[in-house]
Image (cartoon, rainbow, N blue to C red; front, side, top):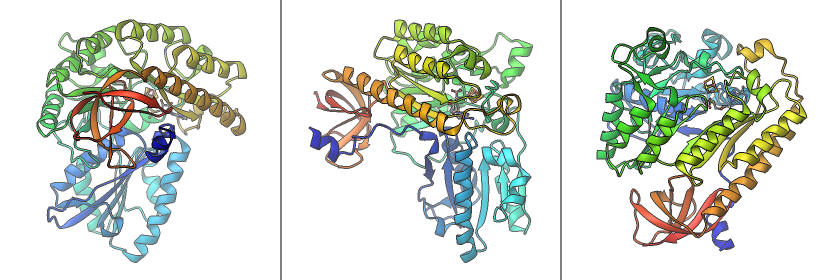
Length: 485
Ligand code: SAM
Ligand code: SF4
């Protein structure tokens, strides 16, 4: 079995820094006149936004390409969450600069959070950039491209209170044909002190439930078997026919409101064969109503991404997270009570936030012991200009201390991931097949309800099918077994 694990390249745990990954648009040849290449950085929201951008430009005569050298228009859809994410984009622009020397007519645009944060400054700092568009300005892209075609630089970083792109059917750029992301809300009203998102993505607004249901139904009809409902804080989804802006709804008050629990219930009814996932849940907003809705529907996956950030209450207060260590642990108890011990739980953690002491860091480690997460995204604190933390608290933990604390968190998480996976060995899991395993077409891979990757021999099974798999072996990142039917 050890050889099999190595052959299938499943020995390393899953990526710990998924936010540092990127995606490239795929090739689409429908005979359109111009080619669009999009590179998307950061979170799933950005990947999803790139699909909206591709859809908008498809109607304006663009096919997508995966080869930057074939492109008439090159977009980088950027992330600002940590300094490293921004540096990656700067390096990429430097490289693209070289390409543009060979092909001066190539239009280079920067989209997303970095565009929103730096606005016109981007055009001054990066001379090769022709176009800058923030996350709420994508409908304006055809006009902005037109402006560049006329020889001008173009910029739109207006943040909207209503835009959800509800009517735009995304072009699936990196699809496996089985799982898809459906954006249900935009923006964030939370103002966690470390976070740049409220400044780059604006106020919270929720997408019309009818358009979400229509998109889920359409995906199911086209053979997709899993949708992940996406938003920065999905549990605070609130939509009323009068207004989709959360602040407006809460200020004016109206009885005619669809909550996240109701939306989940409706999406789950599209088909019992359509799996539903959602991300991200803010611990303060996830209600027992949501947990009971998950328990009621077999097709709502039993997995919750519930970022803690820190295990110490003083640090959580500085972070403006609006919950304490004890309150969070009670929430985890409710999850375990309503959804059981096997419900997948994952988290985000930040090591070395401003003024964090050694004892407070230990609190994060002991909280991890108490919760036993299946998986976590782990970061060290990166000060972001303009955020409440940058204005109020000195970034006073030396980098060496931050990285040491982060490594302690990562080491502990690896041990917990392995422990949690070992619990799954010897049990049968319902797996939705997503495709071949990374290394071999003799093996398929998919996920169980708790979002764990399971690899098993292909036999006669196919992508998009559900199959019962007996797990016989695991690493910290993957379960390995064989079909039990
Ligand atoms: N809305 C989600 C939530 O509140 O859980 C998180 C969105 S954010 C894009 C993803 C993660 O990045 C956060 O949960 C946090 O752990 C991390 N993050 C955000 N700002 C950060 C910063 N300034 N330094 C380090 N990590 C940060
Ligand atoms: Fe950032 Fe907090 Fe909003 Fe998440 S909930 S996007 S961490 S402000």
